[in-house]
Image 1 (tube, rainbow, N blue to C red):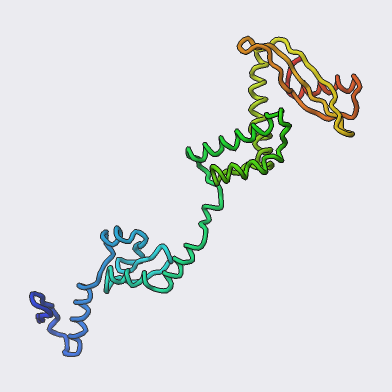
Image 2: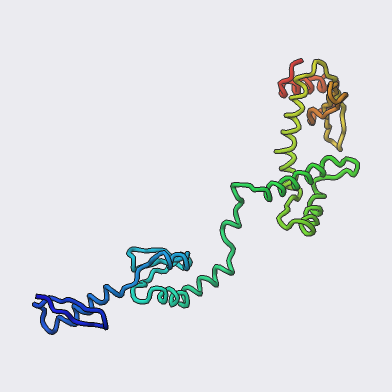
Length: 250
């Protein structure tokens, strides 16, 4: 037989008739506790997006401080109490004063903002080597880069080391690639070379001159080498080696 007990108006609890008087309060408490325990639901998930379900519907985990706690008794109130704990507040203060590790490393994907910044740095690097009238070197970019960074974009960084890397690894390969495409359509070229002594170093730029049907006469630097001497035999051997290295048929 079952016995009914009223715990509140309109609510009744059924217990086994075999229960003793000492067991009845415990059974009633367990039944009522199950009815009153709060679970993690969609409303709490929407209001506290950093709170996730843990091992059961009654346990949750805070993604901000990695703390796990029960919400079975108070539900939303238990979460509010957790937000006021010293552990949670201490984590928030530490996170606010520390930089995220993602900010240290470069992004693997580039949006419009990153592309515009890369174009600006490439343009300044090209300006450093193309403005021969002012005889600029990569060193002048140490100062110019800081000015541009101060006036226009705080993320701009293009001092001499980066400028040299852009010129040698990006602009130069592209320029030679375009030159080779032009030379594939050319039947005849003129080759020039002469010494340009810099103290005890003998520099030999190799210049080519050709006619393009679309743009007219063009003069381009084909290579730049240092040689131990400046005899006709040394210069001739150097030019042949350069043509072979560039896979240019003579």
